[in-house]
Image 1: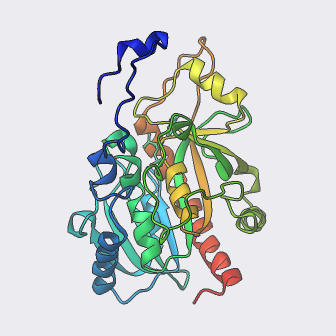
Image 2 (image 1 turned 180 degrees about the vertical axis):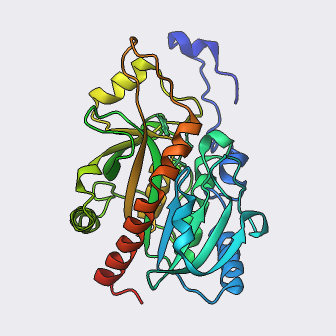
Length: 322
Ligand SMILES: O=P(O)(O)O[C@H]1O[C@H](CO)[C@@H](O)[C@H]1O
Ligand SMILES: Nc1nc2[nH]cnc2c(=O)[nH]1
């Protein structure tokens, strides 16, 4: 940046303003191609690669949260594609995230599941964490189901509860870190997408009804999720602050994926599996840990598999998906 003229500090004459130039492009954030992330054409190549590897044309995409990879195990006639083989895809580095796409049929509906997602704390910029969502859009996915493991901040929540996400607070976005940061490509969506209806109202109603049908309504909640950058779990003071602003569950994912999905007009449903109790008192000895997170995922896998596969069928029915 050009040095500022010291005279500007006291407003004296003789100040010649610095030449107006566009900000330097952060190549990691934009891949140097003038868009926030890979270009439309580059992602189209990724989409075409996937379409050439399977004849399945999914309408619903599922993102499996930490320890929730077994959601993809119900998929019939699966075609599994490791992330390493997919052009332009990042790789999964977190335990509990397999690192592959699974195409197939869930309850008779064509789906693609991400067994393993990408997190900011792994070192990926947010746009890269969400790249698979745009690829899903390009292969024809219209509805996204995002699942995650999260700490329960609402004192009424118990470990093993399932929280239907009603809304989110984009804490990272408050600080300017947003997956849509950078020039906008209108082929994906508008410059200023609304977010007040991010979590589809009909889907949430269906999920609450289904919880009753399955007799799991006592463990199904509805609340507000927030994502922090991680990888550390939160301090007591941070959690108390989040509680004050209305957060019910805390994680390190999903929010940016939902923003990208809504930007390109996908319908969204999200749920959090409450894997640990957020410690909001200095008197408590418990500490959050990833092992517990994965254990609770395993403990709830049967219920979650049933719940998500039935949701897929119900969403497909109201949307008239094939
Ligand atoms: O959000 P998912 O991927 O489910 O995982 C959550 O659990 C992990 C911490 O145990 C973090 O990655 C957090 O984001
Ligand atoms: N940030 C955060 N992420 C989680 N993922 C699972 N549990 C937690 C938690 O307590 N905090």
